[in-house]
Amino acid sequence: MYLRSNIKLLRKRRSRTQEEVSAYLNIKRSTYSGYENGVAEPGLDILLQFSDYFGVALDTLVRVNLSDLPDSQLRQLEDGFDVYLKGTNLRVLATTVDGENRDNIELVNERAKAGYKRGYADPEYIRELPVFQLPFLSPERKYRSFQIKGDSMLPIPDGSYVTGEFVENWEYMNNGDACIVLTKEDGLLFKIMQKDFKRKQFVLHSLNKQYEPIPILVEEVSEIWKFINYISGEMPDSLNPDQELYQIVANIQEDVKQIKKKIN
Image 1 (cartoon, rainbow, N blue to C red):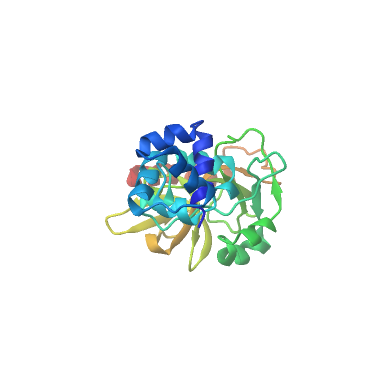
Image 2 (tube, one colour):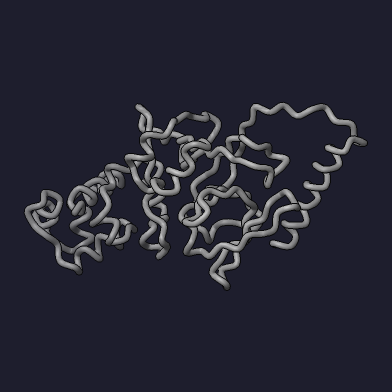
């Protein structure tokens, strides 16, 4: 039970006094102080008022230790991105921070993929991943990098490191977004997303037209990370427009346009 520490944390983040909060709840300041100090337990009616006042779901106030969250996730909760309030199966993200309390970018390389499928929600596992920072990315968002394998997303080459932004609410995703998707059955997939919520599924498209679209039920998806950028050690050759490889890339680009048209 983390209620007393959570309401104290949220109150201070709003720069509110105990008098101000107790006035909103229509209770004595001494009674409210007892809730923060743990010498009194609020009834259900007061708990619901806490939830309304702070804009945070009751389950979150009681079950999640908000002091363990980085500042970026606390801001997301305060902005209304509470996973319990949204009614989704998403959870508060396991993450790491550096010495200045900034979110790290954890790296999931090819060898770590199998473990990530099982340990993505385990803070102990996440803490073992390599971390780094990219100073040009927003400090208010959460990012993670994944190494991709294969040719399904050419011209992004095999072995590239793809960085994605964590998607809290899948409703805000746009059809045609490139995403890293963690599925319960197949693990990590890097694809172009199409939402089909009427059928309660996503359809995953490859840039390489040799691969067929993959339908995935929403309930089979554990995480979604929206594509931001990628890093590759492969240097593309200077190509002549008549060369076969140039034509292949041009065909892929045209396929992407057609996929987006169909999706939208």
